[in-house]
Length: 65
Image 1 (cartoon, rainbow, N blue to C red):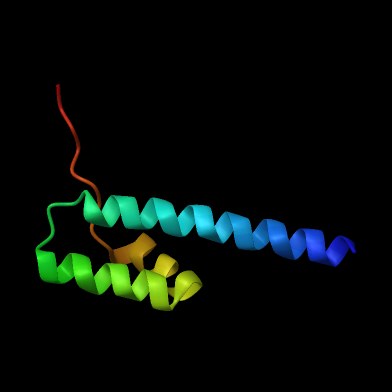
Image 2: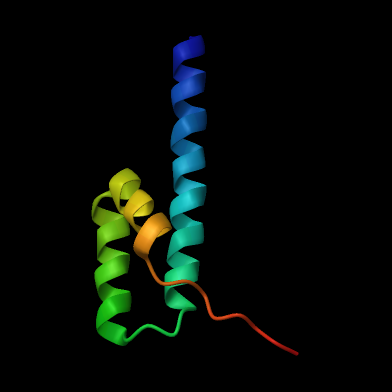
């Protein structure tokens, strides 16, 4: 039973991290083609896609007031 709880927690954490990555990609100044590429990579390969995005992916543009 404890293993199931740990697995569920890990899956939830990965979901949150993937959502963060997707929001960052969509808010970036990257071209539409790059946004589509990164979005598909993160959706098709959640863990690997997130890790690749973390190191080389586009970032959200900084908002200034």
